[in-house]
Image (cartoon, rainbow, N blue to C red; front, side, top):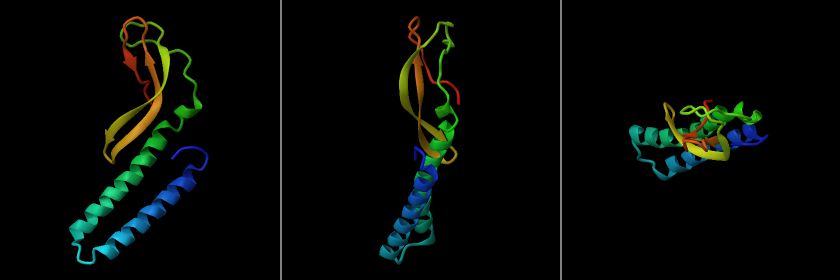
Length: 114
């Protein structure tokens, strides 16, 4: 979920989740409540994971990182472009894409907070 159509993308994904769950239930008429809940949990986790990723970088996308000092030695770090990082949180696992920096002096890698 990125770009200007974020809300529309989210709604489309939520509608898709709803349709997949309805279809799954139709295909599994004898499923127990626990089985239904597990399928719903997995679908919800995937949907919310994308939303968490989007919200986590929302404000950072507006910023251009100019200078970042190395937390280990204080040297000016080099922007190595955006990198993806998997983050585990209460809602599941999200992939966050944000700037990554590397120190030319001590080779330390760093994702700015945010």
